[in-house]
Image (tube, rainbow, N blue to C red; front, side, top):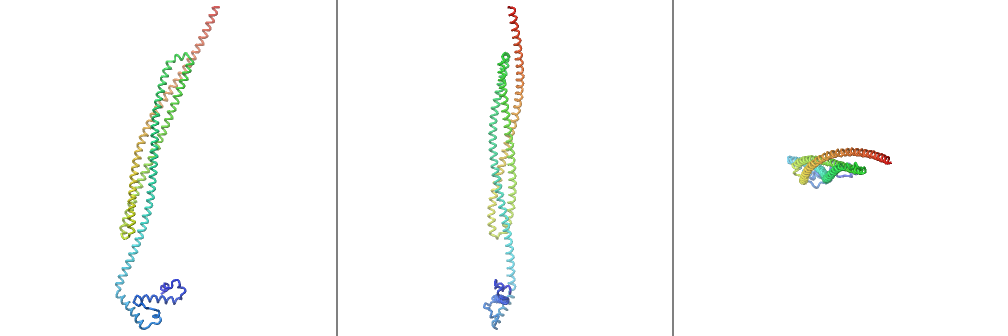
Length: 379
């Protein structure tokens, strides 16, 4: 009665007295019961001033309703049990629906995470492409510099051979002109100046060759740096391959979860739609990952081939550098020997000139003495 009164009065329950509220609740409850029994004209007069006929009618309807209910108890219980089972089924389906929605949200979250990872990996692939292009440009530049260095090396070797030939010819000419040089001090000094100039030219040529060797050393260092960069690129590509394998495992797990969801949620149309959409997106991502895997494998193979080529070029450069260093050492030793010989020759020539001057003075003194004696004898 109190619940019915509160339902009827609503917000005005405090305004109406309690007896009135309870009476109204009782009237409403009794009217509903009698309406179900078949009495549709029940009013307050039946409560305050009931007549005999009305009481007989009301009680007869109530008795008939109770008898009918007792006779149909099995059917009522059956339908009640069906309603309860339907209610429990609805609750279980609702719980499964909520669980499926939670899994769907998790799958959406995982898809967003996978999209972020794929974007990150595509950005990393783009960075690797840029780095590979830069390495290719640097390789072309280094190859051009190497060709230029080879050309300059040939030119310098030709110039050095020409200089050595000229030095040999000058040495032969100096040996031929040695007796004439002993007779003239000024000519000897001129020849010494020429030889000194030739020696200075040879020294400058050796310095140029040393600078060229240092330049080749820097180019070899740059090749080593390029090789390390290519090795790091190969390592990064291996990491990308491992991450793609992890993504495949995650996709397999998602496929298993999707199969489980499809088996459990056959009656949910919304889940089927989302499943089809996820299948399409998954196929797209599988195609993209397959393309990325193929591209990464291709790039790794190209990087390995470039690495082998760079190693071969580096080996060739090191061999050329060692050969050039040996040649430079031999030429340096020869030039030092020639410098020593030139110094010895200069000392010998100076000694011979000094002795020639002394002999000239002696001869001049003898001639003067002879002239004086001749003048004395003539006088």
